Image 1 (cartoon, helix red, strand yellow):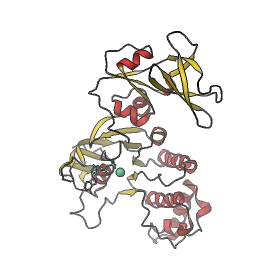
Image 2: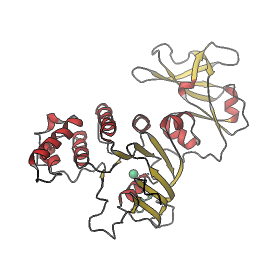
Image 3: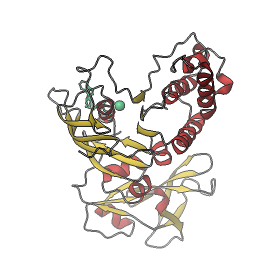
Image 4: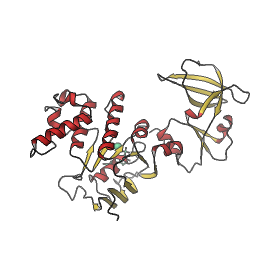
Length: 343
Ligand code: ADP
Ligand code: MG
């Protein structure tokens, strides 16, 4: 085993037993230090299981998890579960002291041997997470999103080797989410913190992560940079996780002017241009979905439905006939499997 690696899983399998397959299978993964790795996958694909294995909250049935070359002890082998050099933040913020102030909740993570240093560090972390204005508030009086920030501040202040985040932004309002995501990115850039996060929000992983790990039915189906996986997903499953794409069979693709011998054609909404109406391209606007700055147009031609984006709201109404030009598409065979139902 290479001692240079920070956090590594080697052929790790964990099954919860029972009739249906569960847990994770044969996971080999090397977490890049100083970067944000995001684990994505539909609900039940094993994301939380993998994170808990990496932290030492679960013991693998097979394989090995190591931190800086040393095996991570499972909960049966260790009095306080979880690796000392790592911190995990989940949606549950149960370990906060609701009746203490934010400042004290965060400062309490440091020893009192050096009071001045403790104060400096507490202030630094509260500033990094833009929460100085909350410092004197009781945690009980905070919103769900603010409590999440306190939990993250408590984790970061101890300077963990790895910060593990299991969908921690779910409670946070969309408008505050971006701020928190940005602050965490900034901390990673400034301090070299290593983050492993679990998310099922495409916007979140695409904007935050340096690397993606795609899990399906407990197995890694592909890994790569967000941009690469977005533009050229190796699997239909990945495309479906990251985009709101159009999925057509080969017959329906013909209606879009695409000839292929593959079974499945994927067209991202932004790859469709509204163009002149031709005999060969006549689409009816069947729905206009207002999205604020833009609209989603739902279009129909010969029974085929396509979704596209329109950046000039109010230009089209239901019943209009428009032409389309498909700039790009992806082709998959059925083996490059897809999501089973809704994520
Ligand atoms: P995710 O976080 O991607 O939603 P999980 O890791 O929580 O997925 O779960 C993966 C699979 O393992 C699911 O099929 C789930 O039902 C099963 N599972 C998770 N935890 C347990 C448990 N404690 N006991 C039995 N099955 C479990
Ligand atoms: Mg989960």
